[in-house]
Image 1 (cartoon, rainbow, N blue to C red):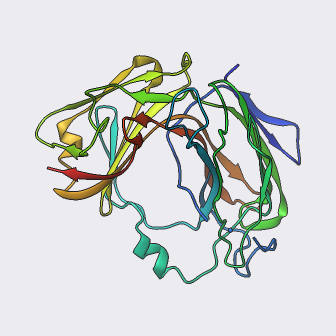
Image 2: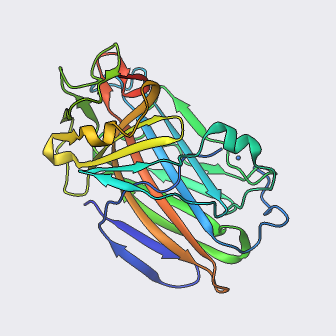
Length: 295
């Protein structure tokens, strides 16, 4: 079964059904269980992410997985445009943005990640409100698509007086970029002059909820392209790639099951939260994430 069930601790089931949406937020970093001063209430966005790596099919050799979460106060947004299956965001957060942040981050208290073949882990917020990403080496988070992962959070982001909740999501299949597909082998180069077709195979049959995401970014501009994993291929149009400047950039290609929800507080708080269960695509050189030259 590929579905998710969403529970708030203060009530019965708030929502239960199958859905796969694009990512919200990003991975963050963590422990000290009280909310930082000044972080009570408010609104913002956040994400919970499990990322699995399986560089060799059928084995856990070289495998790893990580679990992370992050929450941010509202920040100025920019206009996002679309090109085919891709969205173009010109205001992606950068490391310098994080370095400039002086106020404590909001947090959702103690977090628990469990299920599939993962060892259960608890993440506590650090004194500055951030969560430290937790990585497990030489182990697989799951063996095949369709296993269940559960995520729990202690309280509403930024407000320990309001209840938390939990969500259960299915795992996506592990995929491999097909020989001849862009970024399936080194050197990693993407040309902006023409449409680019990515293709992949799946280690287990994908469901209608499984997605494949192609993320490419240069500086603060990022394109995110979302395809059905069942399709086996997806086109990134030149109009999307041309939004990126020429030079050195980064890419990340992964299969995904996800959900996004708005968590509402009793005082009008609204938190847009994304839940992501991801697996990096396999390539001839490892997994599909790293640097890329944009031409």
